[in-house]
Image (cartoon, rainbow, N blue to C red; front, side):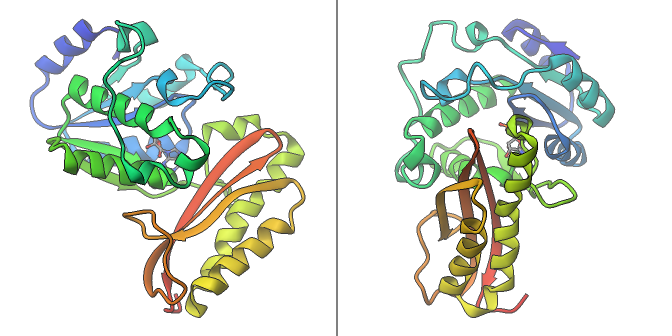
Length: 280
Ligand code: AMP
């Protein structure tokens, strides 16, 4: 069922009995989003999916206006995987008083990686996530590991601000050739699409080098990325999955390799968890 207003959402939710899961999206849904909905189905009696392209998390000059929107197609996909409620508010419904003056301060975790390139991004993300948690009142909220820093920040917000919800991370869904699914892949031309494979290719190469330690991991990934002239690297870092701080050269155990790069005019991100110094 599609609801567009706060009043309709409240009415539908008040009628639900049992547990509720929420999956928050910006629409232009693909199988990665649908994996979150399927996992939500397994974890709760009711599933609410939100579709909202949140202006607050886009900086001027980013792709807010160009961001793909196709509500009809999204609703058809969600009906197939069994979402009970789709909340698709317009910006005036989410922000009835204009841009909110009070926002979530995401702290130092939001200053690195994505936050270094997009300094206002995570305050916008966490503000809308907190608003949507209040509006949908779920027991469980699911987020993709594709946006690993976002997932870490949502976990930190829920912990630090005592939000009463269980946060669940869902693995990255990829195309058969390895490209991480993203609504922004729709921007890629044929040659961009081929060049974009350097990101997942770099992560594969890195996993192969995990047994040789952090420096070898980074070197293997970097080699694959610089070999692709269609890719302009933004960052490639090996970090602690919780704090997003760079791991030392002699680190062992689980680490998160994160990459962001421009392919043509499209900015893509990808990541993988790997186990340093232990052959996988
Ligand atoms: P978005 O609509 O891009 O804001 O994404 C909505 C949710 O889907 C976020 O929690 C994303 O991390 C998640 N997501 C996006 N792409 C993927 C993917 N390829 N695999 C798993 N989750 C994803």
